[in-house]
Image (cartoon, rainbow, N blue to C red; front, side, top):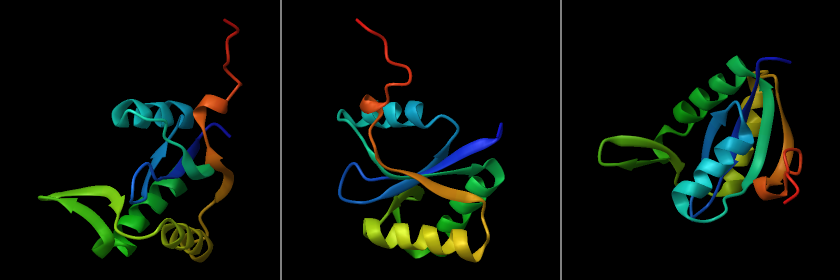
Length: 119
């Protein structure tokens, strides 16, 4: 599937976040670089790019009153629990027939050996 995209849930601090990416390892590394600590993704979904983008938009709509806002900036962080976000994601995938599937739990890019190099 050439248009595979990922929808991920991230929780490096006290609130969950979400987003989409074409390269999940690269995205995880960028979170780690920005936060100064290894950042794992509790849940990763994979599927068609339009469906991943639609799920991201749906989360922003359905959970609009739970989005963490900094001044006028609406972030992709929520003021809910990780389990509430996961339940909402699964419900939206089911109800809206998004072609996305949870493919990984507790993703840690440092344990991804597919691109490892012997030093």
